[in-house]
Image (cartoon, rainbow, N blue to C red; front, side, top):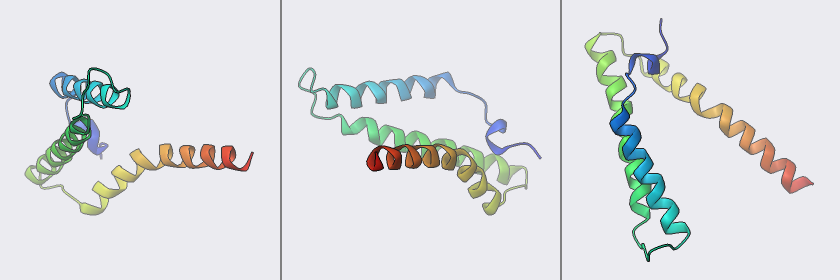
Length: 96
């Protein structure tokens, strides 16, 4: 069976929206241009994530192949490696 995320076509429009969200967060953190609404960038990231996850679920439901356990396993395989590397790096920095 194909990896869940491989069934979702890459969307340049969503990637562009993600870029705007990054810019909003950066401008907020660097206090440039008096931007007080940088948190909107974080909200945009949550909306994008929800949209993409819903797209995956809907496609699998339409194909009659949705499995909640497979869905969460795919999410864990995507997120946990970076989380583990970050945790080990931070622990090494704290101990050193």
